[in-house]
Length: 361
Image (tube, rainbow, N blue to C red):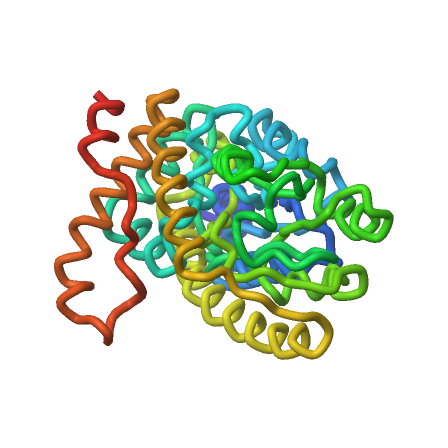
């Protein structure tokens, strides 16, 4: 072979290799605007994923609302208009009620329970089973502990104080539970809460953890804060990935994205707990903080269990998710209770697994 032929052959081989290893580029957005601190978890995942997949995948991230409205992120990923979208699964409960427990639970899981369940008790598989029905892969990568609770201009300390209150509340089971407790659920986007409180359109509202609520300015338009947030005892966040875009990646790149998600999941817990602690101290100076008594919380738990069983029995996917959750609680209780008080939270007095098992069959 002449030198000229060798050079031409080498150049052709290099070009083919370049095509074979061409970097994938994804467009990703979120349901969160830049003004809400929840977006920090999305950004942390993207930054880590881009570092781990350098040369293989580049994710271009856009703040919520800059590409599509928050409520249209699901459809944009499902259709392949964008490759990835960060979310809170509960926003899609209208499509399938099972998205609700994948996002949060009323008086059931705490943040560590979600992490345990996702990582070791089969939770990750259920996320992908439910999202997979919409041609998506799902990577849970964010978790927060219980939501703050209601922010109002009248004290709420017991069930009597809830009677007739118009309260902004997110979640399927959460709305059902509130109405049974005597309140009225009002649904609205997070960006509308501040003005609705300011104008008296609603009597109170919940949104997220103390740090996120502080970033929303709720301390400026309310006087009281009722704790704890029994309606959402923890929340999960993650990224929806279009199945075709996921399948186009190499197994190595897919594994790196999973590593980025797992690392961000742990980071998010410590980050949000630290930020929530800092925000609590600021709220303590700005508003009056009240706590429900134990009798009230016990009644809430009892009614929450009823709502969970009812919603589970109305939807096979919900029954499957909730049954898996309660079986985890029962299984983990053996060691959690034995290690008390040096354990990872309470064992919830949740619904009976037998009732959920009957619905799941």
